[in-house]
Image (cartoon, rainbow, N blue to C red; front, top):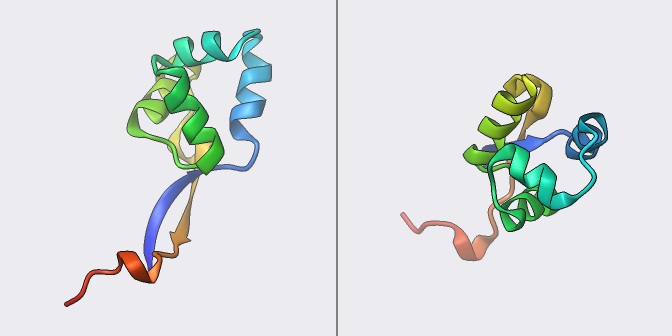
Length: 82
């Protein structure tokens, strides 16, 4: 099993409310990412490096405030054969 960074549950919703930004487009713009990249991160809770940097630079968060480390189960079809 691989370990991955995932966004804390509800984190982006809390940041969005705290920021006062009214639209998804404005929130993505504040993070300097595309709307699609933001929506993907929200859906999968898997932040890209760009999202993390945006959160750190725009709002001053640290990695520990935004993310946790979880084990990610890799489907058998994606396992590498040794």
